[in-house]
Length: 445
Image (cartoon, rainbow, N blue to C red; front, top):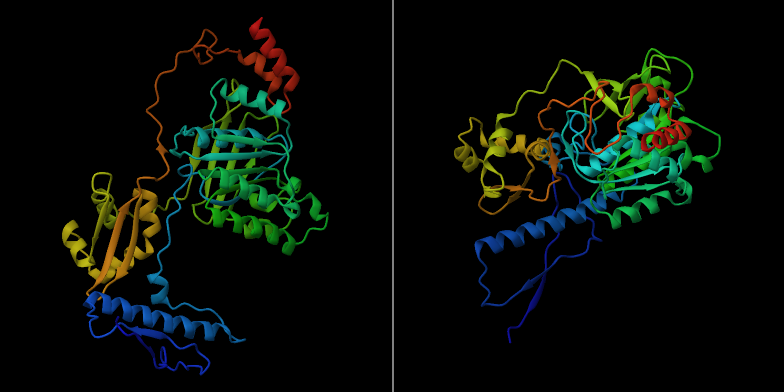
């Protein structure tokens, strides 16, 4: 039996000017005997592990100091690689925490139902591609009967098993996040959670509003959304006072918007208008304005136009080349930056390529579902590329076809009830239960 001896590694300073504490735990390196003949790769890995453990000890000592502040240098920042967060609805909805704000009865609940249905069914919304995922909709100002009638009016008999509703939940200080966490554990494909309305889950917080309190409420919800990778939509109301900046009309303090990833503001010029506008501003998307018109047949919102800043991000030839190279047929690749440059015939220096991939790892995944990582060996630093075959299913809109119309000009849908526009005028608002029931009875008579 080979005799094993234990050697204690000598303390050594880490970094310029670093001081080692005499209280540091010694690193124990086993001696495997005379017959142990490690390879160069094994020796490199052992050395790397030793250095990392020493650095970890030094880092723990520094961070324990009362005056410690965590800092990152610019080169260290550029070495960090962050995963991608592809949009849920292209150009419209992204992962994160968003306020969806509008006056009462402006059509917010119908818009929430549209988003929930299109994402959960994988149906393109307007002319935008959708990444399919499970949706939880907390319709806390409705009951199931009203939800049933509203959804049937909007989508008829088309249903999706990946859309879930609840009309009651706990408040934030009573365990709402625990409830949401349990749902996500049971439904790991969840991509969107809608809380309609924010006021319903913060009722127990009292009537005292302050910037700090508003900020803390949204910050807690945002931390949950960031940790789980979902899009969390918080439906909220506007205040009555007018403002030149639409986002200043969000009810409450600026702490709500300050902590959120962005906000949607939905408004009409007149309450009776069939048209509406949505303005969106967020961290992960450019400011945009969407012009909508209401379909009198289904009461769904249809896109009639959009406005966005003239600036568009320049194309990234490097990412495009990698996206064409790594795909279902060629799902993985590993090699040095120099080898990748030669493989793709790129005009870029190896160091610049590595930095570009570090910084644009998220964009590479968002556009092409290619996951990027790197590792260092004793010979070189290697780039690793992998196509994510389990990425969210992306459903893109098909080219528009000519829709058959009935005698009164209403689009005809085979097997469905067609109601004339005259009948719909009585139910243009959200509170349409009685008129809707009468409409169905007349249609079936």
